[in-house]
Each structure stands twice: as structure tokens, then as C-alpha cells.
Image 1 (cartoon, one colour):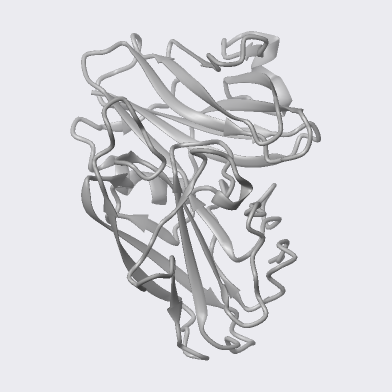
Image 2: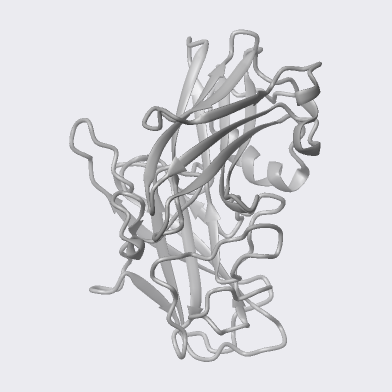
Length: 324
């Protein structure tokens, strides 16, 4: 497990990322398995772990952050308006909590629960810390000699490549009742705060999620009235749009039978959108899904990633559209 954040030299404390999708971490839970924030009191649980061969060097701090569904996340210190908010917890005056456990974190980890109070947003607004499906980021590290980068989470760009102290739970479930077309909104953001660049939003219809992903998704889906099964056929149509980026370039490889169906070595239907964005620019995107050919109770799983110009994944989001 790497410690990519130069401000976190600790190699003992860690959290488990999701596998195979690092943004589906089992070590963060919002209101049990719902993943849905509500106005009023909410419970966030974080499981912190320690390598067996080393003691924890003093108390451990846990930082929590929240944002609207997004394919990439930056901390508030990056200075991107409305990108993310740090969640205050039960320590007055400090947005973090501490585990003063010394060497007592067991092999199964120590779970800490927080109460997060959500206020009703102003009409017509959707703040990062408002109600609804939200992306959560947890960061845990020993207080002594560790100061995390305020402007970059150093999340994974592949299995085992992200900082061991940071994990995400970024899953958005949209249930569609009586609607044949669904629009799932999310954000993209450039991680580079200095130069303009291109990012690609890649949406893949996952027709056969593996057991590790299902272990995270199914408990959330079972709370959706009308859910019956994971769809093993792609919806009639899906695409990604970015209304605020008029020069976005799209590549549609969603149609069965086309050569594009084998795009990037994947047999799954794929849609890509190239966005030219400024430094630390946050922009809204939409996953549009046509459910006219879907069976009642179908849950279509989409794995979305943000890719930089080096073809490195900078973050991801799982969207599940349920036809009920």
C-alpha cells in the first residue's frame, strides 16, 4: 500500500479501497446501507485499520469530506467553489476526531461513528453538504509528524496505487418511476490548479458486476422499492453530456454489433466525452439513460471514470439507474 501524499509518511494506518472500483470502499457507510443524506441527523461510520506488524504511533485523526456525486474530488483546500465540504464531527471546534487507541486497533479494524447534521438547502440550490446521494471521502492518519496535502486527496489511479490513508464511497442510485428517460447529474473537475487541460469522462455499462462490487451495491439496492434484479442487458440508449462545455467531443461505443463495441479492449458498451477545462474547473455533467426497453425492477449499473491525458483514472462514480 503506497503513501502517495508527501505529507503522510506513516505506513501503518490504512483504509480499504473498493475493489475493483476504488470509489466503492466498504470502510465508509452513510446511514447504514442507504448512502443517502437526509435533512437532520445522519450517521457516518468509518473503519480504520492498522498493519499487524506495527503499532500506531499515537492517536489517529479521521477527516471526513462530502460532495455532490462526481467523477473526481478535490478537498476544500484546492479552492474550487462547491467542490467539497469538510464534515464537522463531535469534537467542538475541530472538524476531525481522534482515535487514542495506541496499539489496540484489531485486525478487523476500529469503526468510529459520527453524527452529521444536514440543513435544508435554499430553494434552487444543491450544496455539496446537502441532502441526497453524496460522495464521501475519509482520510485517517496518525497526528504526529503527518500533515496531509490540503489541495489533493492523492486517490488511486489504479488498484493499489492510491494513498493508503484515503478512501471514497461514491455511489449514486436513481430510481425512475413512470419515466422512460433518466438524467443522473454529476460533476467533473480538473485536478490541476495551474494549467488548462483535457479530461475524459468514460461511462461503461457494467452488465456483470463482480461479487466484490455487488457486496457493496446490493445492500443499498435492496432498500429501493421495486428493485428486482441487476440488468444483464444495456439500456436502449445511454450517453454523457456536459451542458456547460459546448466544444465537448463524444465517442459512442454503446451499440451492440459495432466494431466500437470492443473499444479499449472492453466488451461492455461504452460512451466517452472529452472536456477541455481550465485549472481547477468544476463542471456539471449528465448521464442520460433510456429505459424504454428495460424490464420492471431492472437496475442498470454504470461505472464512470475521469481520465486524464495520460489515460490515468483520477476518480470514479458508480451510477445505478433502477426502472421501477
